[in-house]
Image (cartoon, rainbow, N blue to C red):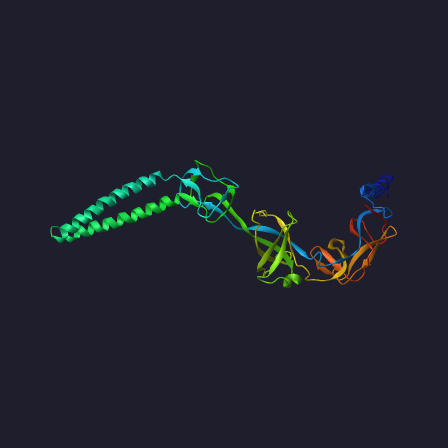
Length: 356
């Protein structure tokens, strides 16, 4: 027979787990409510701030150009061929130098002393050869003595030639004409082969490189002339000759096209400047051009957001032709339409919009 104590114990065994479970459920519910209260809930009735532009009909050829960068025709870092202390740096950054001009003078005093010693040896050996030649004709000496003197003279002359070459290398000269664009050492420093001392840049001729999408690569022909403009000097137009048309696409799936251009007489165009190559009237098309960044959706179904009566409306477009960062649209837009160009976060079809 069960006592009251046994019944109470069994009741507690059932009630305690249930109470713990209930407390856990209540706590989880409170945590969920707290988390939800901290999460930002976007009000779809609020107006989304956007940037917009009015669609206009434009000429494609007026915009058909490619941006690129000017680079030096030749540029090199100059180092010594032999080691030695730098006695004098004859140029500074910004100096114009000609091919063969002396740039740095290394210490060559020891080499010159060795040359003087060799010159004395040659002088003595020449006298010996002359004297031994006379004696050999008179059979006064053995012929081997004359042969040794002649070989000694030849060896001394080779040594002299070697010293003259080494002395010549202590004067570091410009390999080509250009501008000193970096000075990497000073007087008193130690020069060694392979250690850069100066940098010379030749900008009398320049290389101009642009990246072209594959569909436009056929517009460029090898050795053909093109008009190139500089961003820094809008009134300066120069002619570039296409000297390299890329055979391999880069990461952006475009191809490099390089032109050789002659700089202005006063060398206005500097390495690193930006410019544009114009293709003139190679493409006579008129249409609606929009920024490529305004297009949403997929490549299969491209769309743009129109602004109508203060609301965003998705519009299908077609007949796209990409021109650098812009797109020529032939279907889906008309002149005067207002399209969204920026502010796509929280934007949806039918959203209220406010143009900034």
